[in-house]
Amino acid sequence: MFKKSTQKPVLPGFGLSMGFTTFYLSLLVFLPLSALVLKSFELDWAGFVKVVASERAIASYQLTFGSSFIAALINLVFGLLVAWVLVRYSFPFKKVIDALVDLPFALPTAVAGIALTAIYAPNGWIGQYFYQWGIKIAYTPIGVTLALVFIGLPFVVRTVQPVLEDLEQELEEAAASLGANRLQIFCRVIFPALIPSLLTGFALAFARAIGEYGSVVFISGNMPFRTEITPLLIMSRLEEFDYAGAAALGSVMLLISFVLLLLINALQHWSQQRHGGGR
Amino acid sequence: MSASGQFQPRRATTEPLWLRGILLTLALGFLALFLLLPLVIVFGEAFSKGWQVYLAAITEPAAAHAIKLTLIAAVIAVPCNAIFGLAASWAIAKFQFRGRQFLITLIDLPIAVSPVIAGLSLMLIFGARGWWGEWLNDHDLQVMFAVPGIVLATIFITFPYVARELIPLMQQQGREAEEAALTLGASGWQTFIRVTLPSVKWALLYGLILCNARAMGEFGAVSVVSGKIREQTNTMPLHIEILYNEYQFAAAFAVSSLLALLALLTLVLKSSLEWRAARDLAEAEACRRPE
Image (tube, rainbow over all chains, first blue to last red; front, side):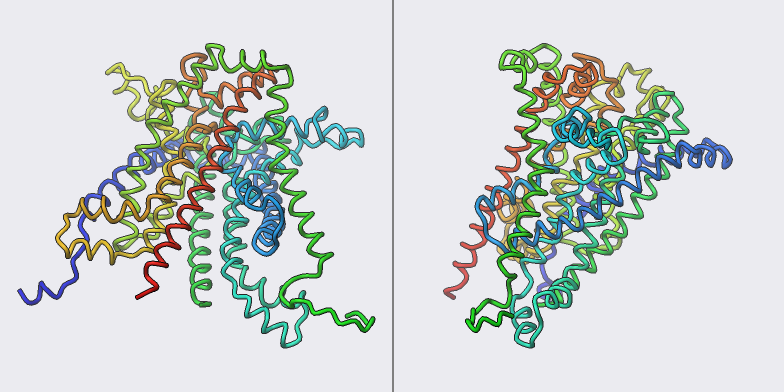
């Protein structure tokens, strides 16, 4: 009796909520994704390698990872800039612009895809001026990269922004009173505090870009070996009813996504520790 | 800095005016080019052939059917994912157990996994040659290339959104309030409905509208499982693709403008929810202070 009364009341519902979560995730994630991996085992090792290391597949990896990486880098630079401007400066319509940053989350990818194509096609609003100079944007890897910049933009802004908001200005004042100039303060005080969140945002934008399909499919032109991203190659394997081949390519991408996600979670953990520890 | 003798006191924690101007111009220019311009284009192209074409494009039977199907998918997917989000965040935020971090990673998976892979995986389970294909066929149940497949794909793609909003907030709020309610004699469900739900209502609502926006706009996964049969399994994004590939640009942008409006509405709602959440937080702080 005594023992029980000193115990904290334990919240109920762990069994129910955990059971439902596990059931839902198994049905929706484990089952289909294990079907994918098992399907790719239908190929023997040589067949698997033949599919995932074919010239066309390797060209698609190069495009997918290359353009995703460049897009995430662009987002890293401009995402930091946008977050900085939104946190530190005041200007008209700031609230509206702040809200607009989330547009790529809310706008369907197919809509983004056709809008970007209309802008950057050789006869498009901006594309025509570049075309006069012999530069094609849509239907080339440049167009793919631009679409991926659009998709990944909010990730860096939204991971850096809260950290920047919580940054203590006293630290900067202290640095300034010790004689540091603005550039030194940024490089030595502000930037190091932002590194974990910048890396997290970069990894999120990169991971999202690798799997992106809807916006890229319109602007890329989908030429095998040149502007065909890996998800599109999977799609064409599917249309040829080559399920095992599609599943093999899918498994490779799934593995990469999963590793990236684990990395992102570790980064977020690190970021939270750094962030919380500073107080 | 300046040798002109006139001492200008300047705050040490901001940049000189010219630099601020450059940074601001660069940032706003980038946003205008990447966010504003696509939006303007969608509406501009939608009305490029006049009101009549616009109205015809969004009211023709194929478009009307696509809108209906999109709504059906969202109406089923969003509540399912809301229940999942609440259950998952309760388990993850209020209890400590092994593999918690791994579970969070699993919940994030659909955000990183390509939608094409999601569609393909469902196909391998429910498709004619899939694991359950024969059984479904024997019982006259069609999942692939039909509405159930579209709903399943939508649920797969959108299930993280509610959970992701709730988990950090619930973790931050801890479990003291719930424990107090239980000590005072409330039952588990009473505690959940009267204590937990009100404290996360804005985050829950935001999760719901974001989930809804993604559900209505999902393209990749749905395009694998739908079969794109006009007036049968065409959702709005798929309808846009078909119109676009048939060079009916004005019509494609007209249907797109509806989804763009939905996106804008989502952003407006999000901002107002954030504002309300901040106000509630400020009120709670104000109540606590006089003690």
